[in-house]
Length: 242
Image (cartoon, rainbow, N blue to C red):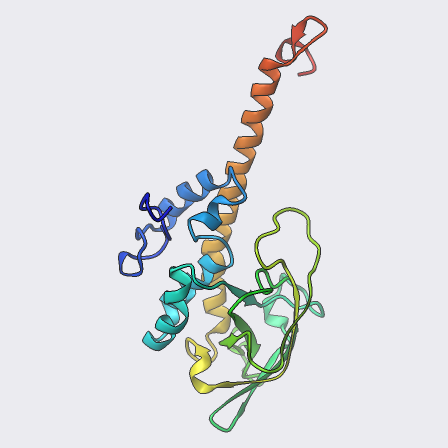
C-alpha cells in the first residue's frame, strides 16, 4: 500500500496520506470491503481511522506528535473506550465512567466493553464524565488519552461478536484509579460527547460502505457460481429457483 501510494488515504499529505474527504473515503471503503484485510493494509481500519480523525481534529501539536504520528506510520494501534455494559450503548449520555480532578491531573474510574482493538493497543481514547452537575447532559463528558501501560488500565477479556474480528478484538476494559496528567485531555472540557459524535459520524459512513463492498463481493461470487455450476443438465442460473 505504501509503495502504491495508497497509505492512510484519509489523512492529509502532511501525515503521509492522500487527503481524501468523506466522499472519497466512502468510495475507497466500498472497494476495501471485498477483503477483511484491506482496510488494515491501507492503515484505515477502525478504530484507528476514527482516532486519527479525532486527533487531527482536536489534538494539540504535542498530542499529535505523540499519538497521531505513530498511528499514521502504522507503528502502533489504538482503541476507543466509550460503550459500557451497565447502560444503554445507544445513549452515550448515560455513561457512568468518571474522571475526577486531583492535583495537576485526573483520576479515572470506569468499566467499558466492546472496546474494539483494546488488546495490544498502545493507548485508548476514553470517554468519561467530568461535570456531573452540568445541566446540559451532552456537556458532562470529556475525552482522555490513556496509555495502555498506565497503572489501573486493564484489558479484562475478549467479548465474542459476530462478524469482523479485527486485530485487538472487542474486549472488556476496566479503569481503576487511573491517573493521567492534565495534558491527557483531548479537546476541551465538556466537549467529549460532541467530539465523539463527530468521530463516529465518519466511522458509520466507512462501515456502511465496507459492508456494501462486502455484499457486492458476495453477489459476484454467487453469480459466478450460478453460471459455472451445472446440475441436472443445466447451469444453476437456468433453474427457476435460482
